[in-house]
Length: 563
Image (cartoon, rainbow, N blue to C red; front, side, top):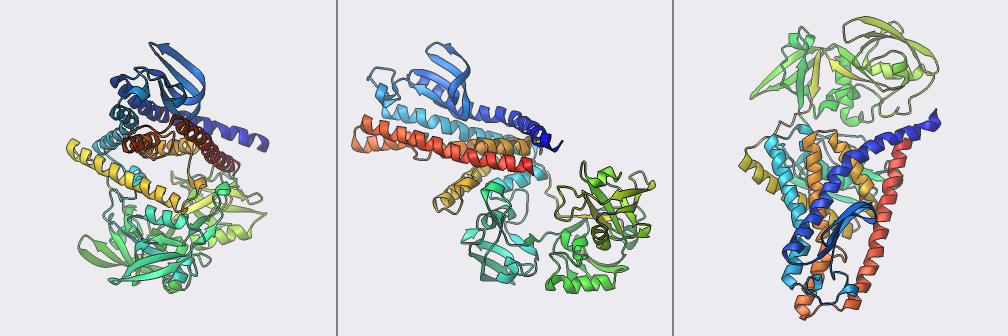
């Protein structure tokens, strides 16, 4: 059956293509429609209106114009009479016969429509409301914190002997800049580290009101498949630890904890984020358990029956004693050994071979029992106690990062659940939403300009870029976040189209504008033969570029399917 897995895995890809092809086709359509309408307005004859390049799939002719859908989804074009320098006759209605202003108007109309659509998309998003997932996506692609109070990030946990630790970064440090790039949110910070594996970086941090300059070298991790390596600093950001849920009558409720409380300290030790509080700090083999956290771990381990919590509740501070009892709630992967054994997601794991087990020891016990069968005691979501025989003779292909035999578990302490602060739903009236749409469009433009600058400096590699296949994948993934997520990403791509088309590259709209500027300065057009040579060379370079990007997109796609 394994032979068929890659074949079966193609079906989600087909679904992703279908999800993405309509909005992406729409963006190309409105871009070319801008050129088309402007050409008609300027009295220029339009011979062809095409979505895509290459041989025609379907089409029809109305009046002087052929409308068609073509096979190669690399964009589209409007072919105007006399646009090709080799076909110019000087007749009325030709592109070259129009005034310089009219030609510039036609060329700039396509990017303008894409830019306007981006504004409208963002306006609509802010009007209907943005949830936390969409806000995070927008923060990632604009470099601006959306819905978050902070315009900076603070470091929470640091892996012992990791790159950040070696550089001298401390928990609580605020990251000001990386290589002079101002850090406004976690997405920008992650990107700067991601694109610089093994390269020395200058980190400016703020600590106790003073700025310090540190030198850090991100660890190179070969986790991008054919795209190569990414950089890691081995840090987690600082987030408040919020009590999100308390079971009625639980130890947490009896201790006086309330939903919305912020846990600031454990036994007098500062807590920097939810993982810091969680079971990772209890596991002696945790990568995070270095000298920085050993004292906290020892303190918790020695006082395992009870913890002293420092609580922030509004403007008040409290100290509460919390009796400790961990509940391990199962997460089960599909078709894994754990699922085959009868373990279900949200089952509570209580015993291992008839003996009470805690999160600290369960992983080690499962690891030690490899090749054998064990009996786990469980409590189902309906409160029914049961036991299952768990065969540990085959591993799951997705076993990594704490997953074992397709099983992970969330440890809930004393009947409460914790979370990082939530981004609230953002919704504005029509006028405020329009202003937010304009603002977000500006942030998006500056973000794209920053990426282009990094490309020129060779800080971002060409194989990190996404072509049609990569864009289809990201669009389909954003669709999982709902309407606002996918609409934001489509707006983002639309603005990308506008900016990239305005670059002074031959064949792009910006290339035409460059020729027009030269014509204005010289008082006559660039010689026809020169234009032909430049356009022909540019065409082959553009095709080579698209094939290069598509090759890496394809390799990445098949790498992901295989794994």
